[in-house]
Length: 267
Image (tube, rainbow, N blue to C red; front, side, top):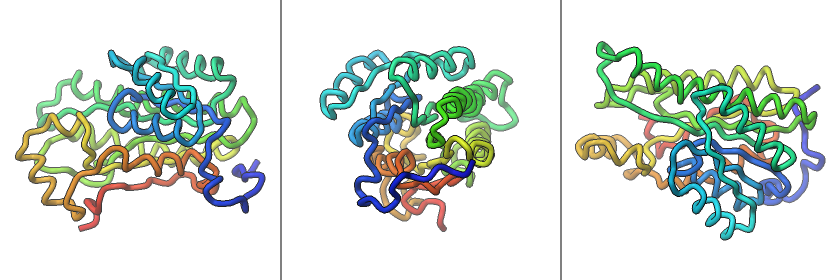
């Protein structure tokens, strides 16, 4: 079966971005980029499962977004590191909402160690969340997409500019390697899943989230000098790209990696 084609590819362009009637699941959805993705998909009309690991505010956050957008947003606690756990969560989302159309594998962590000093545990923890967790999330969603037989599932990975360059001065070989693997994983799945879904990546640059703010000021000042845009991004500035990949507006896009970095990777 060929890549799914919308019933009416000529409908007005803004209507192609609408997600009314769609169901989405977002891992790492309680903060940072994931939180803005949840908000964006709900604003576009989707019902959204906000999947989180440890946030104390997930219930309140889901209720707030639901109230502001009019879309159902429901929190689910899970752990992407454990295949059985995240699979059960994704399956429960599809059962609760009656379907699954969009899945965003966004959960991620970062750490900084000299490459000669990584312990087994430090290396594996990054890979468990950033790579294994992304794969387990995608596997669960992909099986649902295939079983539904609609041909139009959308899988979106949050990767990073660290997939294509080496950030300095921090030492984060494990993080960089995990994100590079995610980008190539998405390309592989895009080819394998063409009968039942599209698979794409978004690679953000420096985004003003908790993950960035914990770094030393001298690092952040150094990074600011390297970004042609002259500033870091607000996570809300990524919302449109996720909606685009989730919607019919990108119906012929699969295997792509959209870099959103203020020009950071260009020089």
